[in-house]
Structures are given as structure tokens and as C-alpha cells.
Image (cartoon, rainbow, N blue to C red; front, side, top):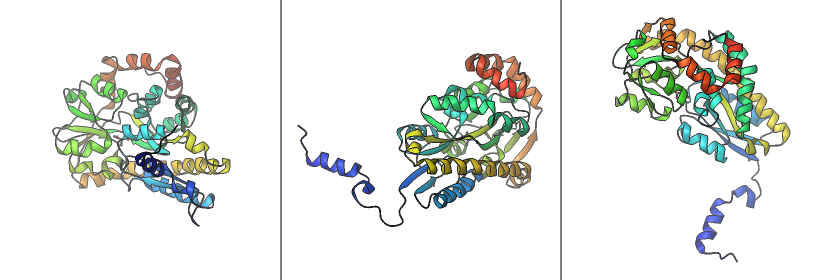
Length: 336
Ligand code: X2X
């Protein structure tokens, strides 16, 4: 027999959503979902997903309301990934390299210098490579929408010394996101990488826990990392994007037509956001220089050669496996 103490009663009532016991107030949405991400509200990711959320509300006649929580407000990336799996958060944009904690092959687009340019990136990620990764994500119980949002080509920043040649990375204390591929890449460069969530990155740089980090220009600008960094080396050492992930149960709880609208509008905003990032990539250098960053040109071929010499490509080919590696090479050519 279940005995109801005051405590269990309280716990039960606290856990019951109001909509389940009362009538829905006029004008309130039937589904109120949370979408979390790690970037400042000013970044195109938040601007464009905000537009998608507004269109979703409109197109579903107000039934589906998605509230955006930018800036890791609901927790760090690793934390939010758990919340997404639990259903505490319904949508989350996450780098495939971090998602690799759960779905190892999702890191494959981060292989150093794999994509020559965006003309290789989008056909691969919207095509076979992306489909392969989404299939693996699906096996782990999450849904990834078809079109990724852009994070961008990554550049190395430093507070202590300019990184000009690969040897400058020797022993360099650098923050990398929580991801085995990121650690592996910078270990192969001879650096000393530390895994730190983005939510802790500004303060880790400010307190000099680490000397540097690496990110695309749009993130460096939006998160004001130029305030705590001095040099920016243009290495383009990897391309990184964000998957729009959904908790499967939450997505499938929506009526079918609403599911289609959500998928369509998030995919559409991804294309808009890619154009924003392309524009920022082309225009931010001057703005960031004005904000105090000294730009340093590098020879990417020398950095790539250093990775090769350290056995990085052979190592990760083994880790990802032949099938996945073949799909990657099918898109970008031989990486040997
Ligand atoms: O954590 C980072 O550096 C960021 C913002 O680029 C990612 O989400 C991977």
C-alpha cells in the first residue's frame, strides 16, 4: 500500500505540470519547449533560431512555443547534453565534436585541415557525410535535423605569445572544448590542451588558467574573447558546425504537422545563419583588429605536415573506422 506522507504529497504536486491539472489558459501554447545553446544572444545562431521560433509559433497557430536559452544559461555543454537526453531540455545546438562523447563518429568533420573550403563543407554535411553522422546520432536516441548551423573555421588565439609556426605550439597551454578529437589534435601539435566548456572559457583565459584557445572569428567577437587575448593566428585548422538536436520523445509528442514545421523552420534558419557567418568571416578581421587583436598569417601546410608527422591522420582513421573515413575522403579527397 502506498502511504502518502506530507512529503510525498508535496513532491507529487510539485512535479505535476499545471497544464495537466487545469484547463489551458486562453492563448497559452500547448507545447512549451526549451532550446539551449552556448553562444551569446547576439551571435547569428541565436538571431536566426529566434526567427525560426517565431515562425514555428505562427505556423502552428500558437500551439508550439520554443523559448531560447542562450549563453549556456541552462548549464554547460556537457551538462545540457545530459538534460537533452533526459528530456529536461527539448532542443540543443551542439558541436559534433562534443556530441562525440556520445556518438564518436560525430567528431569526424573536425579532422585537421579536412575541408579545403565551404564548397567542400556544405555538400558533404548536407550530403552523404552528414547523413552517415545523423544515422549514428539516431541510434543513440537523439534526432539531428538535416541542415547544420555554421560555427566556422577555427583560428588560434593567445595572450602570451604569437603562434606563427607549429613549433610555437610546443607546451602551449590551450583551452579546447570537451572532446577527444580536440585533445588529440592539439596533443599532436605538441601543445598542452585542457578541456573546458565554453561557459568557463572567458574566465579561464582571464585568470590565465590557459594561455590561449581556438574559435571562429564570429565566436571570438560575440563572446568578446578579444578582451582577454592579444594575438590571433589564422590557421583554419578545422571546420566545425552545430547540429540542431531534439529529444526524440519531445519531438514525437508534437502532432505530425507541427513536427514538420519545426524541422522545416530550423533547417531554413540554418541556411540563413550560414550566410551570416560567411559575411562575418569576410568582414570581422578589421573589426577585431580595432578591438586590439593582432592578426598573424600562418602557413597551414606546415601545420598540416606537423599533424601528419605526429601520426594524427593514421591514428584517427583507426579510431573512426574505415567506413566513416571512406565517406570523409569521398568528400574531401585523400587525407593520407
Ligand atoms: O566551445 C567552443 O569553443 C565553441 C563555442 O566553438 C563550440 O561550441 C564548439
